[in-house]
Length: 297
Image (cartoon, rainbow, N blue to C red; front, side, top):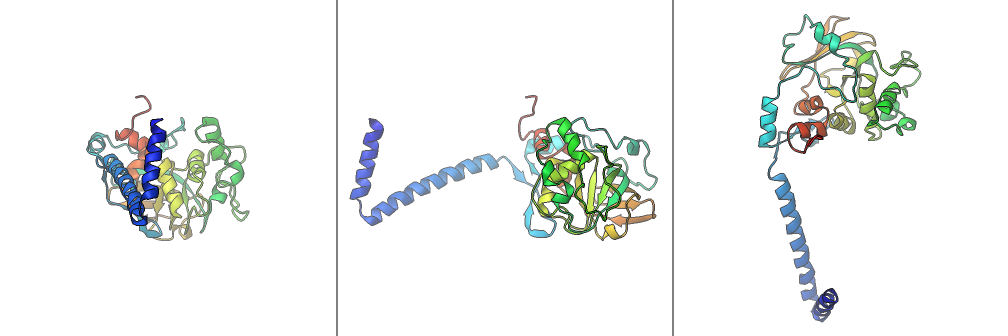
């Protein structure tokens, strides 16, 4: 009854008001709503500090930061010991154990740098997400360990027949190539998260490309599956499938060493996206930094 009376009173007042008064009535209600929304947004964000933005490859005007830090997050990051390799999810086999046991003779900062070592697989320009993981396999659910492993077995199965070496051998679920080297506009096409997930499930540690489609770059960081590294030159013309390479990611010095050819190439720093990938993705990073409750809480 009270609600009906309230509606009747307000309807009557609006009907009897002049056009100018009616307009002011709705403007005031809109202003109150916008102020309430702004207050809610400010209270949510006031405890966080946005770090310096990362330039998104090919889209410098679309800068975005992958790292939100609060005072507690900064303290957690400062006290957290640096681990040379990122944690592996879904009970993934520690494919970097051999590299860790046999340090590279060319490494100058093996204890402080993230390092990957293994065979590389080389592709060209405009490798799209349908080539990385065709749409017919998107029904596989990565959170299911069995389906996650199966997803890896289909990684890069959509490549054209001109690629005579299969990325994942028939009947296998893991690739022998832990480093993928591409050309321009790697990961273009649809925005499917399955693309970096399939590569990570297959055993890829890092992708090195001349440039990326920004959605693939962001999905790689958000899922924490692979490091999307940008080369300073066109490495897909310098390296060949099967070459033995090492990637060293220091704070200021990032490089790829091709042990087969004896050449060394500079890589662009991964920046603030590095700790997010190392933690295992944006949600794992947020839990580690105390931004959101842990699964055990």
